[in-house]
Image (cartoon, rainbow, N blue to C red; front, side):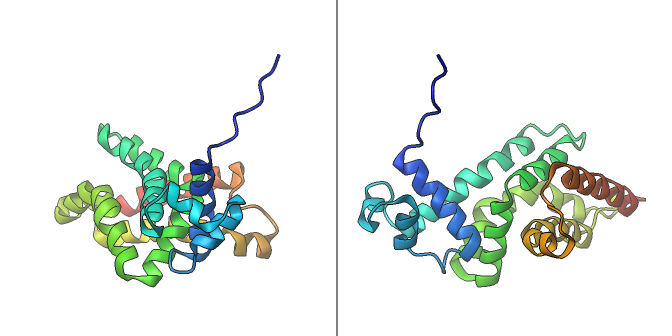
Amino acid sequence: MVQAAATPSTREQILDAAEALFAAQGYQGTTIAQVAGAVGIQGPAIYKHFANKRALFEEVLERLFAPFLEPLQRDTGSGDAQAEILRLHLANPNASRIVQHATLSGGEDLALLVQRWYLPFFGDVRQLTADSATGITAVKVMAFHSMLLGYLTLAPLHQAIFDTDPLHADALAELLALQARLAQAALD
């Protein structure tokens, strides 16, 4: 007998709804009432699971970004960590959308991303950019990061223009190959 997949807990449903809304509207543009409505509960029910909207946002970020730290922690210097992080970005486009919203709104949202997530992500790369012998510069890193985030956040626009899914496996494989060629060219 095949068992049906377990229904996500209310807490998980809240996190899923909040992630989608924060990605679509940003932290500032999302209300607790909207999150509750997406789950089919009343707004106050969210406070059984999260102290406030900021705590909900922080947990959404934790859930999205914690997997990005794992490849860095086991990095052997082979470049596998960067490829895995790129694949994680592609598999989780909401992360890029939330980063874009936080960047545009600035303030506490951006400070939280920078301090908790981005400085650890870019710690080793920042050291490499300080060593001119590596050929890796801050501008090159920023350009590649912007290219990736822009690709993901502009996917709906490009799908409408080109009538093709930019997040389809074939398109993503092409993007990965392009990124690899550009990275190699940037270091030559």
